[in-house]
Length: 452
Image (cartoon, rainbow, N blue to C red; front, side, top):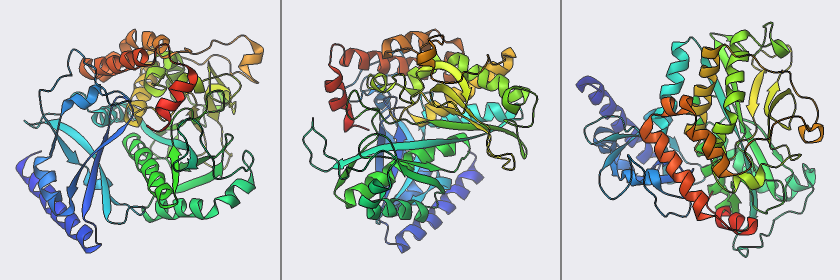
């Protein structure tokens, strides 16, 4: 950033700080998401926003090797008490928080003290991958589904209590918690988050909200904002939300499904072509690249030992490395959309959950898709029906160590992420696998339920 740009940023920060204080906002939460998928934060008074924009907010790079239980590992490039970084808030995403009325929020990018981009900044990685796609003439729109299970605050650690006994997808459940869910919608609307739908899900106390697609970084930002908004509204109602892959082992878990579509100008490349289900050749090759990389991508999108308690066949979790038209058991589901809806056609990666860092998820999927373009890949025949019953499709890795093997063998992901980020991710995955080695499914679920 040159001197003129820096002065413009400072002037805007002063203006934004004045706007926040006029609304009675006293603090701004600056967040980043670590490799364990946990949203970390540093906060500044609203009056210090200009200083944060000019100089950043100090933080340690060791957070890149934190585990889900807040213990630390190390990697070749990151680890130990040495070093310092700076968090710089993205003012374009600055948002007053409706469920925390004296607070605002902004996602942060991370740089070193000399102003160089931190090579392990996950948000900057997503930026770089989106830019790679743009350089190929491809715009990528993405959006996460947010699933969560809400329980009564203060329930015994191993025995969650649910505030509704309503059936799966049932209106009873919505009626039981209508005030709570209305406040979720109100808060998101006040924050200018466009909600597409909200509904009860399958598991006890489980709900899902979907928001409008955005650019890859924006989609990841929204994933963070939506979750923290739900958390804030839940606290107001004496409830506790969990975004963990599973709350109760053996039951249906919560996903973090990622939808994506490819665009050239106003043209949706997922339709209007001669490929499978009307895809263009670009869309087919991109999705074939994602499909090919799914075993390695699991280490990014299903990064916790708890993820593999969720990733079971016949639970709409996407446990098989296959694709299908509107097939909710396929790991890659293609949605054709209504013929008159130009934006309706998209693909859904179903095997991801919300233990994932959303910036890593969006960036890694783009990297895999672009590799598919480079290789001129085509999709295999689509799968109809439940692949578990057919018995012909390949299971995705069934454990974190197995997914990690595929990840570490992926030249595509190593090149895209760069060694420092790639190796810090691998170190965290390895350490968390060891942390829960020998633990029962119940112990894993209990240990992670309150962390996400």
